[in-house]
Figure 1 (spheres, rainbow, N blue to C red):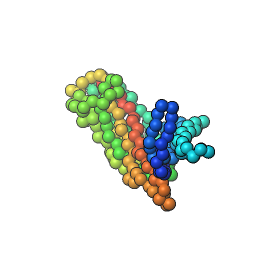
Figure 2 (cartoon, helix red, strand yellow):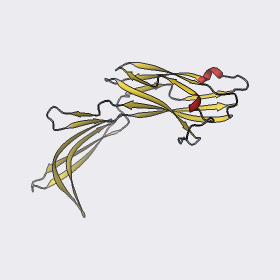
Figure 3 (tube, rainbow, N blue to C red):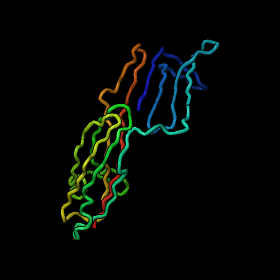
Figure 4 (cartoon, rainbow, N blue to C red):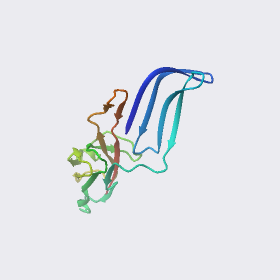
Length: 202
């Protein structure tokens, strides 16, 4: 996500029964998941009155994807007592960078309950028994990275449905970039994705 901010002088924006004093900003917000572009700018009318104008320019189509993840989820059924489908504990994921710049990625596993809410890891959750390699890497523009995930559960592991989420976080090395004329600054904000994991232990 990129936010461009161009500051100017302060103004008083008069609305019915509301007076607001704030810096004049022109803000352009772009996000791969957003479906609109928000533009905020100031103008002066014929009477010299300063106004703030907000334009919501709807997009007809979503912008191109920047990061691809395959598979999009992991759902498996495994029997520890009958040695059934144990090979499904070994998973291979591929992350694709469709953007024009390298992407720094950090992975972590978060244990979840049946309502998809985070819970603390314990001996009865998946995280302590899961190995992920690598967990931090950089994908070049147009490139991809393969990630191996292996779950090693003890025979005494509790039967039932167990949930987790693989957190895929894009990290930004340099979040602020100033324009050449020094009048504007671009703020880049990292993205976070979640790949759902559900393992049914029989």
